[in-house]
Length: 271
Image 1 (cartoon, one colour):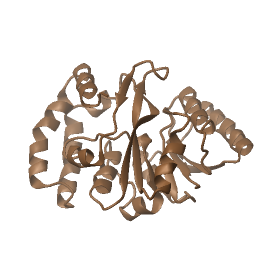
Image 2 (tube, one colour):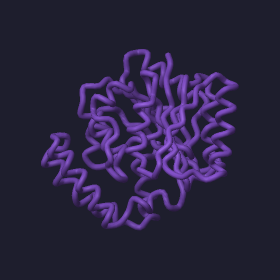
Image 3 (cartoon, rainbow, N blue to C red):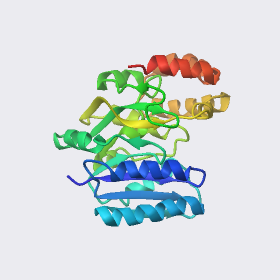
Image 4 (cartoon, rainbow, N blue to C red):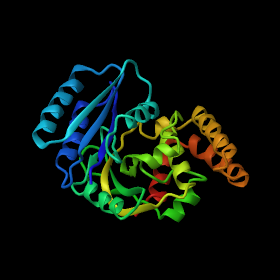
């Protein structure tokens, strides 16, 4: 079965991490037919050199590399939604430009898609510099648990997902929900009648850094999150009770110091 990898790249990303990420695609036991890479605004020379390397490698292994250029930076959600329109395959695997796939990631997810699954997600292993250096995991909860947890938090790692293109497009694709573009997609997916499957095995190494959770903190982040929650409520994807009961824990969590927040994440997502 043919599938495409969908990625977005912007100027501040690390060329070293980007290259490691792309190599983890090229080394897969089950290769994609194409990689759709959105260049979100100006891209520096070091990143362009990695793209040149990728173009040559794709020719070598028979994978198409589709480059989509934004004249200016428009953000992750809008870039991914734009990129979906360039995807020629019926199946899409998401990936970020600093994470690393385990060798059998795509093969295991394609197996589920071939069984009739519309949307599949997996566990992941967090790392800082070298895969395995943290021994910390994000466990992919069962589908029934995700439906409950999404009322309060996002329990799915975005770059671990694979889905049928037409079903995500039928739900509205990626919407411009700043900081919450993945959460918004999952709210719609898990409030639909799609066939969804979790894979408990960690299939990706998910890179974290000191600012990873600091960016998702503070009162402004809380306000943004509540604005999105009200939209989900109006759309019927979040009940009034779930909305009201999520306000206090969400407020407290966003204002916690990052060190404590890391401990909470570790408790919520431990194996």
